Structure formats: C-alpha cells, structure tokens
Amino acid sequence: MTGQLRLDDYLQRYSETAPHALAVAAAVDAIASGSIEIADLTSTGLFADASGLTTGRNSDGDLQRDLDVQADAIIRRCLARLPIAALASEEMREPQIVDREGRICVAIDPLDGSSNIDINMTVGTIFSILPAPDDLGLAFHQRGTAQLAAGFVTYGPQTSLVLTLGEGVDIFTYDRAAKCFRLARRGVQISETSDEFAINASNRRHWDPPVRAFIDECLAGIDGPANRDFNMRWIGSLVAEAYRILTRGGVFLYPSDARPGYGDGRLRLTYEAHPVAFIMEQAGGAATTGRERILDLAAHNLHQRVPLIMGSHHEVRRVEELHCDPLLVASVSAPLFARRGFFRL
Ligand code: AFP
Image 1 (cartoon, rainbow, N blue to C red):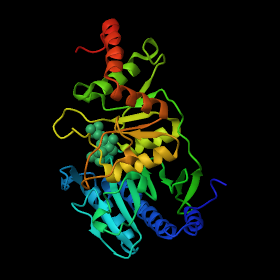
Image 2: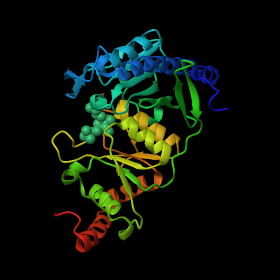
Image 3: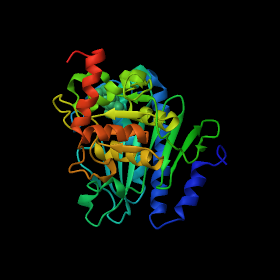
Image 4: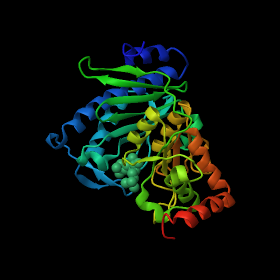
C-alpha cells in the first residue's frame, strides 16, 4: 500500500474519523502545500530571491535569515484560509488569534536548521497541532500530551513529511513528477537500542555531570560500561537528526549547559521539542529533559527553551538513570578517568 497512497487521500480518510479530524487534516494539507514552496525556495540556493543571508534577529534573539522570514510567510499564508483559532511561530514575538471559532491551534518552526542553508545541509519545517482551549490565551501553554498531531518536513535529498495523527508515525515523500506526497513508510518504529549518539561535543566542558558520564560511557565503547562501541553524528539540524533516528535509531542530546543563555538548552518546547517528542514516542522511542518526560511539560512562555534528549528507548533511559542517581555518575566516571584519562578534568 505504501508508494501508492497520496497524502491527500490519506488525510481525506482521516478527516472523517473524529470531530477535530477535519480541521487537523486541513491544517496538515496546508502545511504540506506550503512545504513544497519552501522546498523549491531552499533548492534554488543563491539563485533564489532569498539566500541564507542573515537579515536580523527574531524575537528570541536568534539570528534570522531571509529564508526564515520567507518560510514563515509561506506557511502562514497557506494556513490563513483555514479556521485556525491561534497560530504561533518561532518568527513571531507573540501568538496570533486568527479565528475564535476555530477548533485547533498551530505552532510552527518554519525553517529549523537555517544556519545550514549556506552549506547546503538538510533543513526543515516543524509543526504542532493542538486543540483550541476555551481561553485562547492558554493555547500554547498546554502539555505536550494535548497535541492532536505533529510532524516535520525535511528539505534534503528528499522532501519528506514525517507525520503522526496520534496513531503511529508515517512518512510521505514528495513525488516531483506527480507533484504530490506519497506514503513511503507506514508505522515507523525506532530501534529499542542503538550504537549512535548525536551531541555537539564542543560544549563538553559546559555539560552537567550526568551528560558527561553518558557521553564518556559511549566514548569508552567496548572497554567501558556500555560494553560496545558507538558512532557519533552531529548535523546541527534537529529535523535531520530526528529523521536519522527514525531510520536507524540513535540518541540525540541537546542538554542544558553552563553557557550563558543555555541553562535550559537551546531548543524551544512549543514548536520544536513537543512535536518531535510526540513523533519519537509514537514511533516507540522516548523524549526527556533528563529528568522529565517532554510531553508532560507545558510552556510558561512561547519561546521557552528545554533540554532535549530523544531517540532509542534504552539510551534515553540510561541518560535519565544518570540524571537521577549521582552515585551512579560517580561510579561510572571514576574508573573511566582512572584507567584511561579520556579528558583532563
Ligand atoms: P538554527 O535554526 O539557528 O540553525 O538552529 C538549529 C537548532 O535549533 C537545531 O536544529 C540544531 O539541533 C541545533 O540548533 C544546533 O545547535 P548548535 O549550533 O549549538 O550545535
């Protein structure tokens, strides 16, 4: 059945399943349409009337590239025709109340990983779809478990839409000849354990002890407590890391660290961690801050950051064990340094 089923037919079937389903299906369809425009824009590189050049900073102080602004405008234009109660974006200071009769709210990161544009690396659009609460001022202060749907689109060798509607994860790949997304993988499952970790290792001296202990265990490989060798990846694009984990397992860590402004890590809860965590759990993986399940959290403010550790269950749980047991951290760290002196303290 994969390869034949078009996204619009898949959404049509879903739209008849529940009261909110029609609104969710319409929003996913609109985001998918907008993503095709963004894919065209990112694929033309410097020939586009938007390159990866920075134009300023967004409301949260991140460098903003013209493609960030254009991607945001495209997605918002595609959603504008729909009865959406409230819309939030990384590129917007505050949420926008759109239609008070709307049944759903949408949070987007229009172009995640945009610092990779000028080096021609995979970037993407992330989205989270929530029910519209009676008080729309609380639209984006809901727990992650409230999400009705979530997903992301990768703009890489393939333009692929990763989607959960709450009953597993399916992946659609854009068929340029047919000009439509087609179902490529149904019911994606993340391997229970993996030998691949992803972290920006240049920040090691800023990490908390549990994160150092976990990474040192990975680096110790077959000679250490994990008793197996690991591989490392770091792309600098959350959607690309998530897609790799959905494909071959692994664990991704963007923890809090001691750098100024990184006390809660780098990634935003509402439009990055919540949607990606929903995908991870729906594919049999896990997503945590190290101490709390990401989906149990509710944002206090729209651009609130959160530490994110996600991926294969076994490795995520190991990171949590180390966060919850300082004696375990000490027992892991001492022998590693005593025998091998991986890093100078
Ligand atoms: P940009 O959107 O500014 O490129 O940030 C991407 C991101 O939020 C996430 O996609 C990456 O995993 C992470 O930042 C990379 O952060 P470092 O640049 O600190 O490694």
